[in-house]
Length: 163
Image (tube, rainbow, N blue to C red; front, side):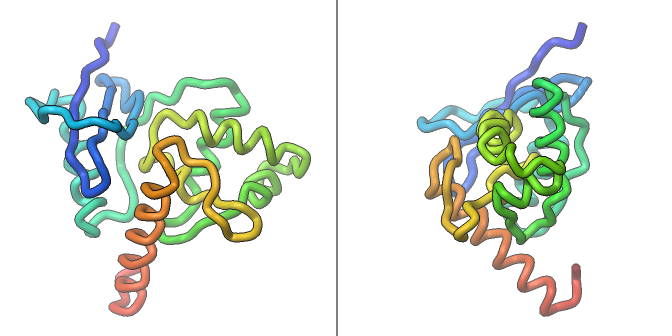
């Protein structure tokens, strides 16, 4: 059995706790307190490196094994989140449309809120139908920062022809 390892990463919007094993990334959560960043287990090194690239604006997609664990509906939503392009956002209603169930808007929100691998599984890219920022476990300030960060680099790369 693969033992779950833990690493911490300091980012511009707080510390992240990353857990995972050789199977894949198990969770990625923002912490509301400071931690001492220590040795990074080898199974999490690529994740930390890719997150650092993301925060520096040089990475727009992740190439990592994920160890997502949830209900079949949650897994369906989380896999749909992985299809939202960098620098864009969709509404909860659009997410429900994508799974062919317009009555599931609240359920989509619930699954989105239980996403255990923030940023990599980009639940921050889902917004209200009216364009407002709603519902982000790590706080709306962080959601706003992530969306603005991605939008700025996506626009830069569009201008310079890198997308």
